[in-house]
Amino acid sequence: MVMDRAPGVAEYLSDVLDEYRNHIQQRQDDEQSIDKPFPSLTHNVLPMFSDRWCGGPDQHTSEFYHCMEPALQLTSFLFDEDYPLLWFCHLTFGERRRDDQGVYIVPTAYSRSPEALIRVRENLKEMGKVISFAFMPRDWPDSAWGITFTSRKYHPDRFRRFKDHDFPPAQSRLGRARPVVTIASKFQHYFRRVYSTATTPSERYRALFMFAVTIGHETAHAYEMWLTGGTEREEPRWCKRDKIHEIGFAWETYIIGGVSDPTQSSTSREMFPYLCSLHLEDYSTLADRDVFVRKYKGESSAEWTTRDVGGMHRQWAALLPSEFRGGTWFLSPDATAFLASVQVIPLKWVMQWFREDNMVRRKAEWSHAGYYKQAPMPDTFTIIYERNTKGIHIQRPLNPYFPVDREIMRQRRKTQENAGQQAT
Image (cartoon, rainbow, N blue to C red; front, side, top):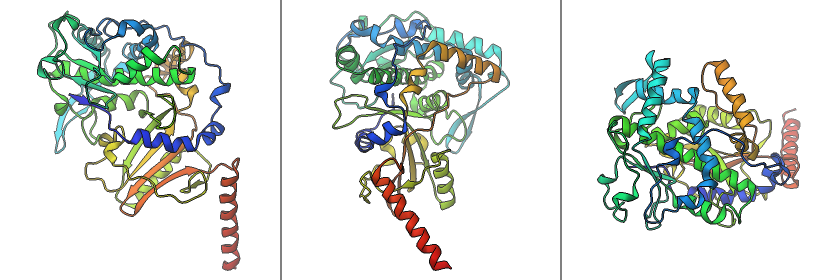
């Protein structure tokens, strides 16, 4: 069984970001002024994503399949194109080695070969004949975006309300597992009750993107289960530098460039008010910390502050590393000091994944480069959450457009001038 979501942090971060809504809109293009055409991606949905949905309790996929179809087209594209599939070639045919943290994978000549790609396609096709997808019934207590099981027969309590005929029949004898991917019921509620009437085009795009990522994340887990018959506890680390084995997050960061997390505001009526890209690092020295901070600030020329939107120093909430989506994958289990970069993903960037012309361009880029290239994230509003033994801080960029930030910058200049005068 694989779970990928921890409670608490998404709601807290969303409330923090709500305070900076004007900063976000001023830094990025105002979503109200952006043209938001319907997704134009034309890729056919793979049969496993179109035909393998369960019936039974709390399963209403047939009512809203057309709403979630653009997301399934995107996931199908990523599971059907050569260069994204190289990730699966590495997982399937890379050499599995062992160290004191467990098994990890290293590339081989064969794992990068055309023959490996052909065999991976065949594997995915065969797995697609036995995998099942369902939305979590409402009586499940989980807060995960997705949970993948090796087989329903090993979890009778979970599936006690389902009948045999609720599951699509297995159409292949290959593979060592019959994975069941279950997706958060909040997605079903959104597509069934909210998508067509009570939402904005911006929120629809964020929901579609997160749904596509969740399906891909969980199907990556399912593939490893189908391939080896193992459970999540027996997964390998995708590469030696990974802190723990978590195939879903390894796929997500390889394909998307980070761990995606839709914040869930306690005040906003939207279910997907923001979509964020998360990166976390733990550190033991100030030198390491400074390296990570510079990396998170990127090419930004902005000055940064630990003051809040009102210019005040604040007592920030103590968030555990494990509360961040992907926190246990990014960070060492014994970490006492960590940084979390929370980038607000621009709507334009999300929309590009659903545009046929853009994905055609990306395919050409991959072919020219000879490898999969991530879509670069533009300069965007970012906060950096830091917790260590000395306290908790949130850094954010100063923007002279806002009077409070101008005053902070003015005070800094005055302090610098006074220090210079004293030095002379």
